Amino acid sequence: MQEQAAKVADFQERLCRLSIQVATRPYWATLDSSVVDARMALKHVHESADEAA
Image (cartoon, rainbow, N blue to C red; front, side, top):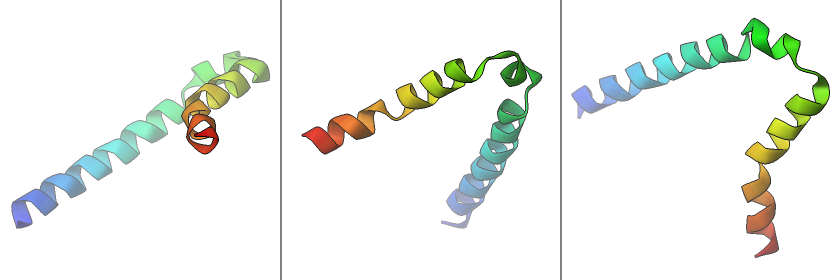
């Protein structure tokens, strides 16, 4: 049980570090806001489908 908890904690720490790296990449500054807005809308499209059902 402790081994599993340690693995989960390691994965969560890695996920946090990688998320920060992705979110702070200079690439995002090269996009105009409509591309970012479209990406965010696509990311959440399943939520709208769930509400409609």
